[in-house]
Structure formats: C-alpha cells, structure tokens
Length: 361
Image 1 (cartoon, one colour):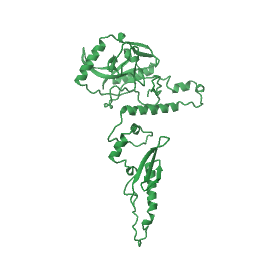
Image 2 (cartoon, rainbow, N blue to C red; image 1 turned 90 degrees about the vertical axis):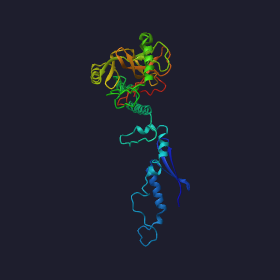
Image 3 (tube, rainbow, N blue to C red; image 1 turned 180 degrees about the vertical axis):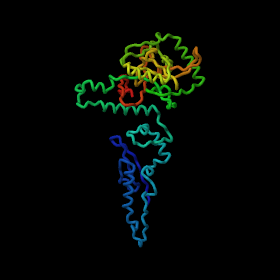
C-alpha cells in the first residue's frame, strides 16, 4: 500500500531545525529528529518492521520474495533527496529565504560548502553577519573571569582593544574586483577599479569642479568628536550624493605603503590612513593630507567614498572623493563605515548609532 509523506522543517526554541516526517494515512504519528538522515533512517526502520513478514528471509521454498541485499535500503535515495532538497524549485525556494547568508558563513571549519544556483546573498549581508558573529565572540572573550570588571584591572581594558592601535587602512584586495569601490579594507594587496561611463564622468566632473570652487576651510572643519578624538564637520548643507571632500595625501606604490605601515607601527604612531586609488597606487594621508582624514567610523554613516576619473591640469586622473549618502545639515559630523575585515581581535566602536553593534569588525 502506497502513501504520501509530508516533510517539514520546524525551528526549535534554541534556533536549531527539527525535521519531521508524517504519513498521510497516519498523520498523528510524526517522526522527529535533529537531522535529515536521523528521521529518514527512522522511517526506513519502521518500513522494514512493517514489511518484515512480506519477505522469505532465506527460505528458498517460500513463495515470498527475497529481500534485496543492498547497502542502500530504498532505491538509492538518501535523506536530503527524500526531503526534496535536490529539486530545483525546492532549492530556489530555500535560497530565497530570509537569512540565507548564514549558509555562506560556516560555524566550524569543516562545515560543508553550499553552491548557490538561483539567488546569491549580498556581500553586505554576509559582512553584517560576520561582524555580528565576531562581536558576539569578542564579547564572550571579554567576560571577566572573576565576575567583576574592577577586579580585572587594566587587563580587561587591554583585551577590549581600547588601548590598541587602530589602523585606518582604507584599501581593498585586487582579487575582489567585483566588489563596490566604496568598501574599504585593511591590509590590501591590490585593487582594480572598473571604468566609468561617459555620462558618469561628465556628471562627476561638474560636481568635482563645483566642490573645488569653494575653499575647503569654508566647507569643512575639524572639531573634537564624541565618537573618537577629532572629527570632520560640515559648515554647509549638503544634498544627497553631492561631493563633500577629496581624500588627499601622498600617492605611493603598494610596496612603499607596506613598508610605511610597518614603520608607523614601530614608531608608535596612533593611526595610519591609507586609501587605495587603483591596483598600483595608494594614497597615504598619515603625515601629508587634508581634513578628510579626520572622518570617524559610524555604523550608521552619512557618507560613502568612490574612486572617480576627472580632468585635471595633468590630464585625466583618478581621485578618491567622499559623497553624501543622504541630506546632511550644516554642523553635522561626516561619518563613514570603515568596513574593517573580520579578523582576530575586534576593534571597539563608540559611534553611538542606534544600530551600533559595539565593534568595527
């Protein structure tokens, strides 16, 4: 007698899945398990018990059929196939679910890699998930062994990253050419900037000339910030996507930037500020730069950066320009998402934004 089976995946209280199988002719009997193979094997065992009397079990004189001698119990199926995970429309439905980015961020090193077929999660969602997990791990590492922060002395503060050196290395890897150029990262080894269309170049040229027509000290000011040290503040009202400031500094090659960063580290300089211009050049504003270097990090920034091509006295050249991602009122601080990579030792964030996770990475 054939029957239909209903497979369900239920979310448990501890945010872990529970897999269930129920037969259409007996819906009250439900097989539950923590994994697909667990419930699938339990179903196979029940089927074997129910059909035990239908086989001869080695009796060659019996008219009953001989049970198949095969390692795979039912026609080569396995648990995931029985649940339909290999069917295209099931995979498409699963890949469109909310939170699918968690599949790309393994919890353990030996987690299997899933290859997407229909929908690929956004890089921003993956980075946000990595930051949240890194923040949770960092907070767990900062738990006081004695149960009292005061008893931990200066060690608790040192572990939090508050006394550590924060390197603002706004650079990107060359291998990540498909990523938007306004996403910075520390310790990069190269970056390719895709070409701009002619209309974009004309629009950027007009905005660039308009920004340069007003002296910088009439547009911006460096003041003490509640976020960290000094910050960059605007004196004028800025509309969305308008140019705020050009990130200026000394243009150097990658090998020179690497040597300088090591030298800054040894000399005890609190921060170094580097931004990748293209695959060969990096703008170092650590000792030679403008007020753009005072931009602080925020988890809810009001600005972003792009590498654009403009016509200068020396011909066409690439420039790093900071844009407003919303309307900014006069007197507001210009903030930017540093987008540090997820590395060992999270950096504490004090931006105070409503969505702040307490960490820069």
